[in-house]
Image 1 (cartoon, rainbow, N blue to C red):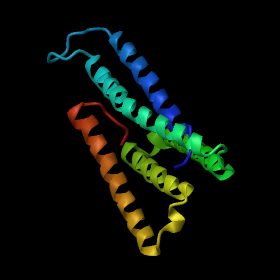
Image 2 (image 1 turned 180 degrees about the vertical axis):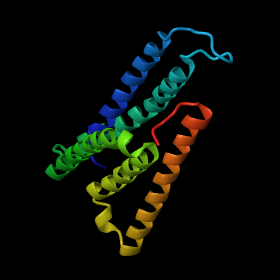
Image 3 (image 1 turned 30 degrees about the horizontal axis):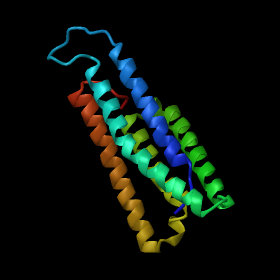
Image 4 (image 1 turned 180 degrees about the horizontal axis):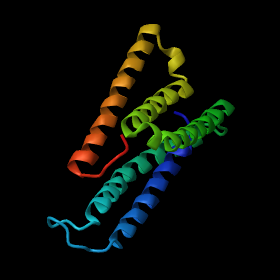
Length: 168
């Protein structure tokens, strides 16, 4: 069991951020729109679901971290370096995503972001080096398919169902 304080801290951040978003959404003006839903409904629904799903994750990760802390008094240097590399990787990826989002469109930028995020974590975690060549190709292909389907599905939901235009 690895001792990584990042997981419980991230889940705690999700709890605080989702609670803040829930409260902020309540301040949205209640205007007349088609149907019975207020403008605050979807933001409050999503932030409420994130809050509810983050609670068991926080409990599980905090418990695992506490047990690992009792077993290992010192975090290995390699684990600290890997954790820092993962955080820096995500920040760099998000910066790149923001930079190319409008230039290449939603589907391409989101697909690339998802693909590189998954593959980056596989490489940084060290799993990539344990895979055989056929497993690597299978992993690349399945990640590519997943990234494409995810980007297209989210694009469809926002542009067709919610009628929110996204850059193409």
